[in-house]
Amino acid sequence: MGRPRNIGSLDLDARGARPSGGLTRFWYVPLGFLVAAAIAYGVVWAIDYLRDDGGGADEPAAPATTVVPTATATPIPTATPTPPPPTPTPPPTPVPTAQPSARFSPGESVVVAGTDSCLNVRAEADIEGQILDCLADGTIVTVLEGPEAQGNLNWWLIAAPEVNGWAAELYLAKR
Image (cartoon, rainbow, N blue to C red):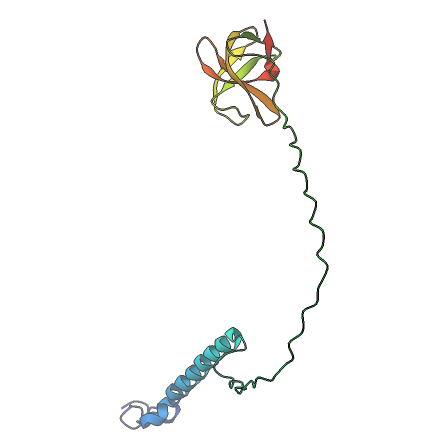
């Protein structure tokens, strides 16, 4: 038959099964629900408390007061001196705005000079404008319009042999 089993250390009955303890074995389940409900209530309370602006429905309303009109004496008007009419303010003198130099005129032929390499011809009158072409020193171009002041530079719309675009005045010279 072998050795007898040590039933007492495993809390087993003679059949080798655990004895039924009923619902008392699971006492921690309802306790867990109670703890979770308390935490949820605390979170809702804290949110309501932090969002309260002081004028919520939790506070009693102020008692209504009735205003009873009382008789007052009507003051008698007195003559007051009329102040002199204000002197009109002259309109401000317009301040002339700085105009770009008219170093060239439309239709004039000019030459690219002083670049040490080439002059960038751009799609817009701006240093950030897209570069369309690069013209070498000595290239003769025709001024179409301008100047347009942008970014501390005066820009001229020019027509070159293969491209039309904007060039900085700094690198254009009279022929």
